[in-house]
Length: 605
Image (tube, rainbow, N blue to C red):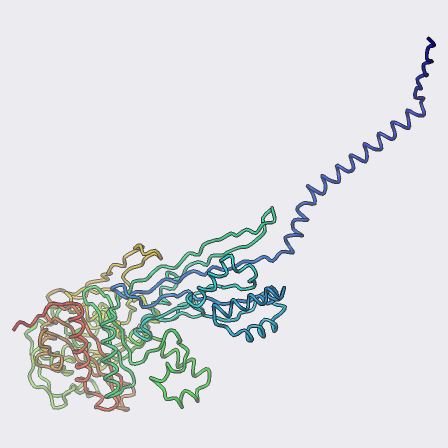
């Protein structure tokens, strides 16, 4: 057998080795470069590419409005609330992406919202390059509910470019009722006047926000920061008493007319305000409507107003004269002069005074309301018959230091601190003892030559009849969270004691006599005893012969539960000094208020 010849093994020479090593190194280098580029693109460039992708997406950030807190009357009925409203927003550019989307979107809007197809198409084409076009505003949920349900279903795959934004609109179910006490809201969030303004920060909340964005997997995500709603404010107002007061004013104005009239109803034992009614009012849902001016101006006057004049007129309508206006109170101040004398021991209660119809004070002759004189009268009759002469004699006995001391003790010249904006500044409208003349003292004794506001008078008057305790007047009694939990109770604040119970009891007796046999007999009621004081103040300039008449009344006389203060500025169709008209109005409001509050009858058969 012939053996095969073995082939010789070829060995790599040095040149071949070098070429092999170079080739392997080159391949390795290419591999390293490839890996490096992959790492570079996956790690270092990844965020940049993400940002580039995300930047091309349609991001959105939507405000979620808070709900402004409600304002309630004392029994829980709504005086002011915020109703959620919707705005229909169309995205024409998205709707026009295809004929199918356009057709089905328009069909859906027509079917569920009864919108005319031709009008829709015209609007969409007019705004064809827009992603945000407001089509309809202030829609209720009932207007959009069916369409929203349809869009959320699986039948609306080709419906696109329909968006609903949310906002709140302030509503006042009772329209103009207590409008100056409640106020209104400007620009959706800013309280103007009344409780809306004073408690604006309490009623306001914090807006939320809804974000739409793409996550790291390029999937759409939502992030929501929920809104924080405002707190609810529970007022002291009784809407039935408020309606009664406004009704009585309307009847008076229709029959007699005036330059302006107001009624304040309050609890004299804790400072709670039941009602504030004025002859002017407005609709807080449309406060800038010219119709609001018609109670004070004729249509021709309104038409001829400049914008500046109209703004001034609106401000006059919006403000609350019970809190903001100051005037000379007249004879309603007389009980305070007597109270000062009793407290200081200058008066004992058994004094008599002779009224001849006037007093000579230096070079001045100052007349009594009864020009022929009242003759010899008692201390109680100085109030019940409203005798200027007797009051001047009393003030002279007291002297200017005592008189001025008690004016300030009763808080005249100071703000009451009521929780309403725009309280009148009256500090400069009172005489200091050091610059008070004899004539100033004489006229101030019966409520002339100084000014006060209705809320100042009513608060001070309450202390005269409740045992001597001065309470801070207030219109809010409780704050609640948006879920209804009590946040805080606003308790009555007793500021000071103005007079003793003994003096208070005497003044109640004197003012009961005013109603039974004095200047306030028209306030007599069948089922309740009552007390009060009439007032007639001659306005400046005295030569004009214009007057403000008033009556501050309370019932039951022995244990007052309700105080009613009526002020009428310049009666138009009757004598301007006819205080009886103010007394009659007050009586009707007193009767209705006592019944509403279930106060037991005080006159037994």
